[in-house]
Length: 501
Ligand SMILES: Cc1cc2nc3c(=O)[nH]c(=O)nc-3n(C[C@H](O)[C@H](O)[C@H](O)COP(=O)(O)OP(=O)(O)OC[C@H]3O[C@@H](n4cnc5c(N)ncnc54)[C@H](O)[C@@H]3O)c2cc1C
Image 1 (cartoon, helix red, strand yellow):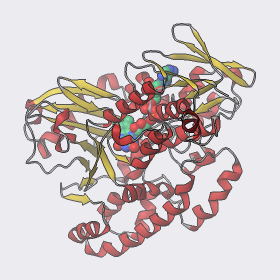
Image 2: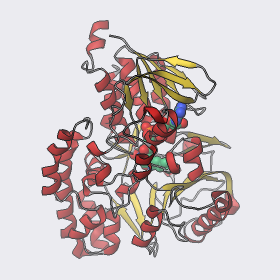
Image 3: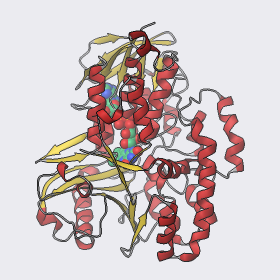
Image 4: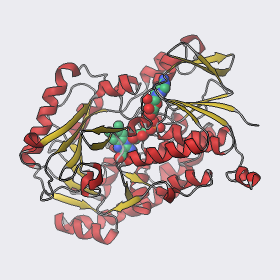
């Protein structure tokens, strides 16, 4: 039966669900608060530069392929992905670069350059991550609605030691301190501390090794545009600058939404891509909530937040040591992570991710110019930091560091700039406590223990996106869209296309 479905939010999770449901013939309306699609993948255009707001490391292209195939299309006709190798260039505190390559032989040669005695441990670490990938990959796009779903995976979690924190897990195999950091940073891509995020998430390492790391020509914004075009072709009604103020409840079901302008839109099903904690707290009135009470929401752990500065320069930096994806590690590691994730204080020091996409795609900046973004981990808004005061001095510190160490004369050459901080995540993206990645991926907040893709309170309310199972990061939120769409309509993909033929 065709249903009237509302999708709240146009992040990758929301768009993936909208496309899959529209492809099955449902009448889908997508409501987005901002003036453009993409959520965290919003693309800013400033003085001729295109800056991807969020995700830059794209992996698992098969997940994009599946979405286009679900709609009877070929992904290649909508966007172009180009592989990157090395995936990352990681600098130690002295500025020595480690190239994190795709292939094992290249990695071993690179480890040899740093510390030959770490090669054997790395081999064993990779063998274990392959075992983790093989055990858990089949579950990454399946719902965890019942305790039994969780119990099924627990024997493998125990057998593979996948409950241990990622950094500790790597340390069992690799003794070199810098290389431990190099092989355990991946939880940061999904909002977790390498010290606490269970090694089950090291399947991300194997996602990258198995499927590669890619860049979409035109930036991640080109993927957003491709999804936008596909939604248009499938007849999804997209309303931008349309904020949902309340999800309307009728008994144990939802009946639609009330918009910020007071109007109401009815629906048979609501799929929410808004932050799950913010949604329960602000869009569903307290008396209706039995499980996700304010108390319970406060008890959950949320990810860190970020400061991101997008900047374009009027000169190129082709002679620098930098690569497309750079990670610049600080001397202080565990202490820095604890400061950021405990939310106690804004640390004075920082480790950085520096994006330099014009090395791969000069078309996203004016001729002769270079485009960057620099990202620093900061506590979420549980911390007392006053960002109205701190934003400018913090920016100056990061830029001075980059100018002194990597990009000579940087500040004299900047011709476009934009900055976000935890206030952006809270106020623009409606994320509880300004967390950049929503609910933290701890062991007690994973799989069945994470907010479910079908609401635990209302039969026809579904959740997709970073705060739900399987978690944050583009592949995970695409998977959440698939899970929700299949729970809503389990008709096999392709059946509708056959009917039309
Ligand atoms: C700076 C940064 C860098 C990142 N880098 C990577 C990376 O390299 N690789 C990777 O895989 N992942 C990365 N991530 C993580 C990844 O971007 C996110 O986990 C993912 O994009 C989140 O998608 P989502 O489906 O949860 O929706 P979101 O992107 O969070 O979008 C939710 C949307 O809902 C809208 N919305 C919220 N409330 C309402 C409402 N009431 N009414 C209407 N609309 C509403 C918001 O405006 C927003 O557009 C990064 C994240 C950040 C912030």
